[in-house]
Amino acid sequence: MFALALFAVFFAIALAGLPLMYSLLATTIGFIVAGGLGHPLTSVYLSYIGGVEPFILIAVPLFIFAGELLSEGGVGRRIVAFAHALLGWLPGGLGVVTVASCLMFGGVSGSAIADTAAIGSMVIPAMVKQGYSRGFAAALLSVAGTLALLMPLSIPFLVYAFISGVSMRQLSMAGVVPAIVMAIALIVVCIWYGRKSGCDNGQERSTLPQIWFATKDAGPALLMPIIIVGGIWSGLFTPTEAASIAVIYGLCISIFLYKDIGWRDLPRLILKAFSTSATVMLVIGATGALAWLITVEQVAAQLAEWVRLVATEKWMFLAMVNVALLLLGIFIEPLPAMLLTVPLLLPMANALQIDLIHLGVVVTANLALALYTPPVGGTLFVAAKLADASIGDITKALVPLFAASLVVLGIITYVPWMTSVVYKLIF
Image (cartoon, rainbow, N blue to C red; front, side, top):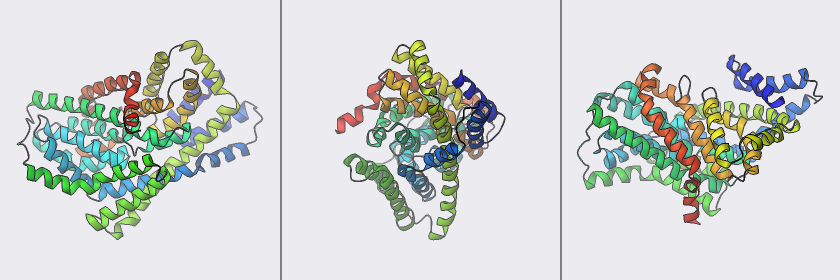
């Protein structure tokens, strides 16, 4: 009953329009005071500070800053040109190029919003000119942009690794195959749409010199995830150190190699990254306070016992996780939703002997859908603005893309070897 009342109050406050950080703190303090639990309020403050103290969280603002550098440093444009040279000849070629570009740029930025903004500003005008509806162009971009969350430099993976204590080294590889499978599903929808609408039957194949030029131009950008992930694999540096190297590498190729941004642009990019990071950290701290209350009141143990009674099999538990997160994702962005739910899911997953690496990919893939599920969503809003499309038009065009994403989510959930095959092949 305590857990049910806690979550009911939190959702009521959050849906009333209070910012998420204040909703979390109001729920925590309100239950302590109104319920006469006897916990000193200084414990809330200490748990809040403790939530943002871990050294690994330094990587979050650094990766966000690296993503901003690469987003505006010409990397996106070169990746789009590279994808176009390879795949532009397919039916629905521009849609296919959009998906492939988002997949590759996601391996560099780790941010769905940066992925959507960087790629969308270049492909949306071309898609509209080709004859794609603005609704479909925006819908495809909003879905494809979330592929970044499953790639090795994913910021949600970093946060999940911190919460669960799993190896970032393994987790960074666990999403590669699911991301590729998701991209293939979206490409199939693009080919179907191109043929059905007749707006894009593909262009002429690029010549070998054109492919070589595009590869050479995009090569330095595409090397970044290889360098970062390779360093983490080999143990040469930690995820936090990898974030610092990502910033240095991003500065070098954006300012000195591509020269698409200058030193005068850095204060603006730093401020933008700082604003995003501050929002994330404030929510992380507030979630830490609520997680402390949940721990001391043994809510996790109560929920675990309830799950043992209801979900007696792994597949039942995973199905419940997917349904719960899909509903939660309608109202809350992925990172706050992850911070709120993962501490509760971990003891239940351990009780059912579910691999926590696999669970992390399932949770991340599920919450990625939140970014483009109407009526709210980060990539949904960015894509709508870039394409000048209404949410109603985008929602209609989302149906086949959302259906494809749900099918892939089901495959990821119940085919666990997908999340371990890359790591096992390498090691």
